[in-house]
Amino acid sequence: MKAEMTFEQAMERLEEIVAILESGKSSLDDSLKLFEEGTKLTAFCSDSLKTAEQKIIKLTGDNGQEEL
Image 1 (cartoon, rainbow, N blue to C red):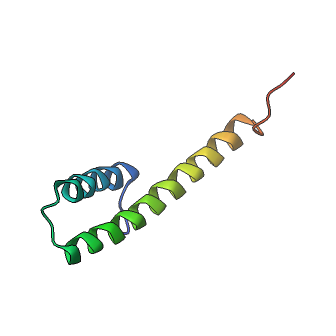
Image 2 (tube, rainbow, N blue to C red; image 1 turned 90 degrees about the vertical axis):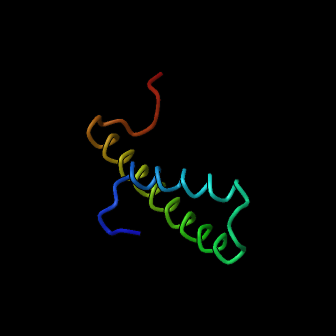
């Protein structure tokens, strides 16, 4: 995975990986490599979303609790 990959690029690559795996046309070895890459991309995307959420909370002053 490229160090300077954006969230959007990671999601696009994940979509490519899913399409390849769903096609059933890759070998077991290739499928395992793609799956490993996909899990790394998923972790990257999840971390990116958590970071964005934390920034939004900080900027809005929202601590996640609704006012009553």
